[in-house]
Structure formats: C-alpha cells, structure tokens
Amino acid sequence: MSATPSLKLWDLYFLVIAVAVATATLLADWQSPWRRAVAVGAIAGMALLYVLAARPLILRDTQSTLSLLVSLVYLLLFGTAIACVPLTTWLMFAVIPVFFMLLPLRRAIVLVVVANLIPVVTELWADPGGIAIDLVIAAISTAAGVCIGVWISGMAEQSEQRAQLIAELEASRAELARLSHEAGVAQERTRLAGEIHDTLAQGFTSIITLIQAADPSLRDERLALAVRTAKENLAESRAIVAALSPSALASSSLPDAVRRQASRFSREAGVPATFRQTGDARDLPTRVEVVLLRAAQEALTNVRRHAGASETAVLLAYSPETVRLVVRDDGCGFDPALEGGYGLPGMRSRAAEVGGTLTVHSSGESGTTIELEIPA
Image 1 (spheres, rainbow, N blue to C red):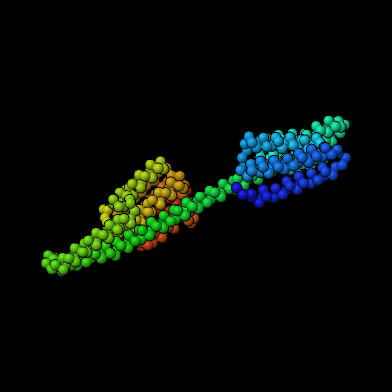
Image 2 (image 1 turned 135 degrees about the vertical axis):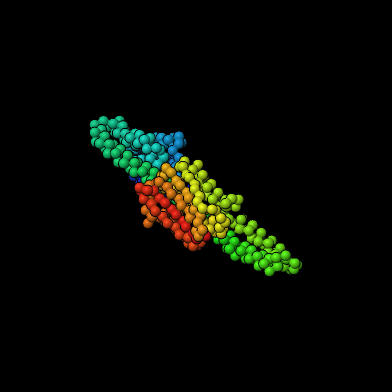
C-alpha cells in the first residue's frame, strides 16, 4: 500500500520533532556526555522503530498485539530519553499521536497517561520539591494529548466510513450500469421482435394468403413453391420472434405470464396478490404483449420496494378495441409528480411506442393505481 498524503505529512512532522529534540539534546552541555549519548540513541531507536514497524502497521491499519508491543517499546525508549535528559519531554508531541494511530482509543489513552507520568516520576526522583508544577503540566499535557487522540480517531473513523461509502457507491454504480445495459438489451430485443412480427411475419402471411386466393389448389408448381418458401420463412421469423421475446411469453399466453408474475410477487414480498382477467383473451402483437408484461413487472416491483402494502390486485381486461392492465395496491402512495424514482417514465415511453397511455393515481389514503391501456 502506498503512503497517503496525510501519512507523508505525518512522516515529515515526526522527522522534524525527532531531529529538533536530538539536536537540543546534543547541545545540552549541562548534562554529561554519556547521558546525552544515551538520550540521542533512544531518539534514534524511536525513529528506526517508526520506520521499520510503526509505519507499516499504520499503513495496514491493524490494531494487533504487535501494535501494542511496538507502543510499549516506544514508551520504554521515551522513558529512557527523559531519565537521561529531561528536556526530551518534548518528544511527547511525536509519541502521543503514534499511540492513537497504533492502538484502540482506550489503550492509547492509558499509554498517554503513563507517558505523561514519566516526567513527573523522573522529577520526583531528582527534585521532590518541584512536583506540584510538574503535576499541573502533566495534567494539561494529558488532556491535550487525549483531545488530539480523540480527534485523530474521529478523523480515522470518518475516513473509513467515507471509504466504505465510496465503495458502496461504486458497487451501486456498477450494478446500475449492469441493469441499464440489461434493460437496453431487453428493450432492443423487444423492438426487434416487434419489428419482425409486424413486418416480415405479417408480410409472409399476406403472401401466402394472396397466392392461395389466386390459386387455392396450387396447381401451378411455381406458386406452390412460393407458398412453401413463404411458409418456411414465416416459421423462421416466428422462431426469431420467440427467441427475442421475454421467456415468460415464450411458452405461455400473456394472461398466464401476468398471473405468474402476481404469484411470484406474493411469494417473494409476502403480500397477497390477486389476478383477474375480464374479456376473452386473444393474440396480440408481440411488442404489445411485451409492453404489458413489462408494465406488470415494473408495477409489482414498485409495490414491493416502496408501497408497504398489505394487499395488491392485478387486472388484465380485454375489450374489442383495447386491452388494459391495472395494478392497484393499498400502500402509502406517493406524489405522482415525483415519479422519476419509480420507473414510470420508462413505462410511459414503452406505452407510447405502441400507442398506449399510462395513468397513475396515488394518495396516502387510497394507495396507488397504475393503469395501462393499449389499442389492440
């Protein structure tokens, strides 16, 4: 994993403090040379430990036993430096953030308290008379360190939540792209099926009818050959239409397909759904049947996702001039002016392609009724 800009900035911050404190320690000529050497060695050990262990653990974002061990070694080196040269207390500004980046909040706070007590204990050992001011400084330092740590933990949590949200958004975008692609493919297949049905298939049927009307017995071998060829091509075009049409319509009639959709909805959503047919069912153009079936699927999907209904009814009504699909629920309703999130624009567009109209009535008291009427 590569270093993030914020971690690179922290690297620079840690380096500046370590170099500054080490330089000040070397210049502290009131301390014996061996004390300064040990203190600088402890600072160098902290820097090396950061590069070899702490930084990789921060990058991996693991709060393990190894993280606790590294933090304890930091605490030991910090205490050694202070015991030798007290002014190395300034290392606190570099040590405390490391605790919060390596450990859970509670453990980090405990180590911050211990780190702030080390100078107090050292001063108590060297000069018991000045302990009061050291306790005040330690209390202020501890409070400031805890505040910084809580802020660091909060920022880390926000970053994690933001990363998770971005991942979810990317997953949703990929799923939306997949669904849009599938919808586009299905729509194009439906369009092609309708075009083939309404042009080639009907054309072959007309050719057969006209030839048989001219020569019912087909005594002319050329006419008989033309009829056989037209029938073969009609069968091929119908096979292509069947392959391009939704599988629900490939092996059953439109009423059966819609009835199965209602039954499936009832099983999956746990909401009773009744299906009723009025009028005599008849063969419809393929694209009309596809639009009606897709509308039933979309309407029932909306009920499952948004309505919170306790009952749903589906009606497929045949009349001499039209066919109507009505899906009614007793759910919470919605504002029809905000229909963009319910797939209704797509339903309207598909209905318009076959000369149909879509009507939506919805309120919180009466639920929602979606009615699709197509001349057929």
